[in-house]
Image 1 (cartoon, helix red, strand yellow):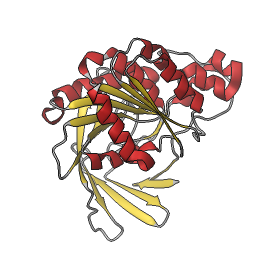
Image 2 (image 1 turned 180 degrees about the vertical axis):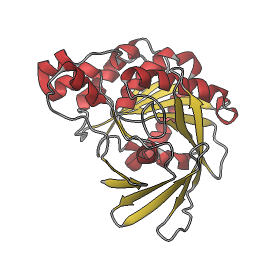
Image 3 (image 1 turned 90 degrees about the vertical axis):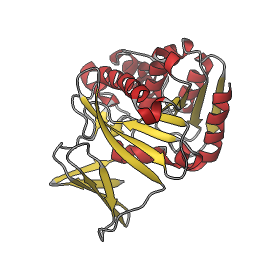
Image 4 (image 1 turned 135 degrees about the vertical axis):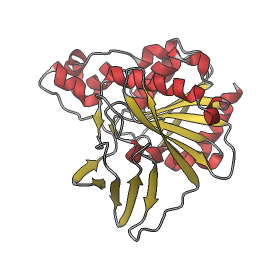
Length: 305
């Protein structure tokens, strides 16, 4: 568990997970899909505590540019750079995103990272950073209502925001001339299938890790037929993959305790060729932490198809 403190606020962030219980109404049941951490726009400092390690993140007041220091105020040097950006979603909300680049190479591939249902950039961005060692750059956004991003966290806004991120990326000089891969994890993995189907003429491929096949399917996994009845679908990754024609890599762990393995199998079964299924072990959306080399190789192969 990571405890994050900023000004007088304390937030406990847990790895994104769906709460497996039947709630009292359809309205409240649908709210389980989004559990954002909200950061006050005037917050200038955030402290992350992980075990015995303490990291302090300082934010500027313009674009929320982060600077990382240790307990002794010594600057932490990463193998990558982070550029914080603010752009407007098509729903009118200002969104915060980070462009993360390797220091020693000019990237030719950008991974658009659509993160899971909880936390925000600070708790989510390291999920893909092991892939930076293979030359990728990453563009991760916070959806409306997450982190510094404005607005309300809703499934409608999440879809609009993800599409707006593609639009922004296609105009950004250091992204627009690279190959564009959408890499979605968990809720973001389900979302990525829908976005990829809608924007497939503007992207080069899709990676889905640890995703559920549909909102109703994951609700049924948690609460049986009652969950399926109470949850509205709105949009469906399983159905979207039937209309997506470009290369797709689907990654799922047999040890995933958050999204059952069968969801990944179902998504793969409904996807078109060219498609690849990568069965892994370890925890939910931990693929890049344990399998970065093979995932990177499969992404490179995906672009050759």
